[in-house]
Image (cartoon, rainbow, N blue to C red):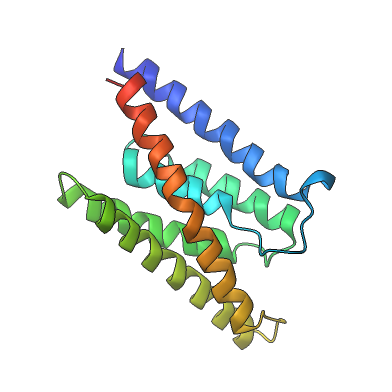
Length: 163
């Protein structure tokens, strides 16, 4: 019975990941007023924090690469950074039994700021046009503002359906 829920969880993660990659590029989602949050990062981070054993590395890389292609990001840079940070996070979570909500938010904040910093630094060193620091900070803050919603949804679904 546990493998059935694991397969369902992985399929739901894949479907939600594809929706979060395609939704921002749809014509109805164009918004120039606010910085758009990285919903894919929120999905991956909350999935890792709440169920790191059921979040496969292959799906994380696949979704990140699709996002690179569709969002015109440097190919492979973000998937590499997300992969490294997610594997470090998995190792950390295997050593811990439970993580508090505040600790989870601090870990995800650190992860997002490090990924953003390394991405922009690598783009700068490769002479690829990079964003202004104001835009990077705005992107990170907007992403962190919606992250608790994803964490709350994952915690509720884990309590309701995966017991």
